[in-house]
Length: 218
Image 1 (spheres, rainbow, N blue to C red):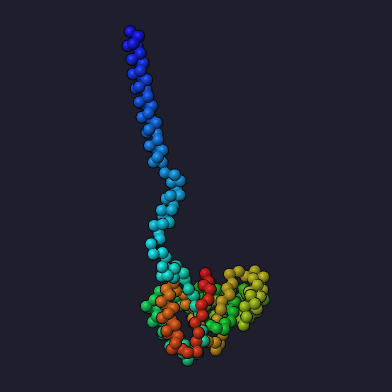
Image 2 (image 1 turned 90 degrees about the vertical axis):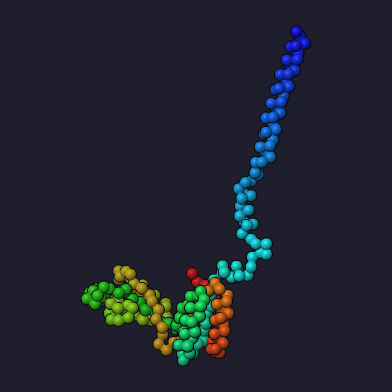
C-alpha cells in the first residue's frame, strides 16, 4: 500500500509542476509582447511617416513660408500700367497685393453716423466741448463722419486724438490718406516662389523700379 501512496504523491507533484510551468510560460510570453514606451513608439511612427525617403523638398519649404516684397520706384506715368500688370498676375497666381502711398497724412475722424442730420447733431456736441476744426464729411467712404484734423505726421495726429478723447469723446479713429502728389508702391505677399519670379520679370519693364524683400507683418 505504501508504494501505491508513493506513486500517487509523485503523480500529484508532476501534475502540479506541469500547471505551474504552463502559467509561468504564459506570463513570459505575455511579457514578450507588451510594447515598451508605447506612446513614444506611436509618436515616432507618426514623425517618420511624414518624411519621404528623399527628405524635405525645397517646394515643401517654400509652400510653408510666406514671402513679402515691396515693389518701389514706379513713376507716376507708369502707375496705371503697373496696376494692370499686377492685376493680370493676380489672376494667375495665389498672392495678395496692397497699393500704398509713399507719403501719407494722418486723419483724426469720428466714424460715420447714419445720416447728415445725425452728423450735424454730433458736430454741435463737439462744438459745445470746444473741439476746434471739426467738420462734417459729406462724401466718400467716411460720409457723415466728423473730421477733426488732417496732419502731416503721426505724432501730431495722435496728440490731437488724445486731446479730443480727453474731452470725453470715445470711438475716434486714426486713418491715413495719401499725401497730395505722392507716388505709390506695392506690397506683395505670396507663398509661391514662382510668383516672385514672375513679378521680377514684370519689373524689368519698369527699369527705375526695385523689388526688395521685407518682413511680413501680421
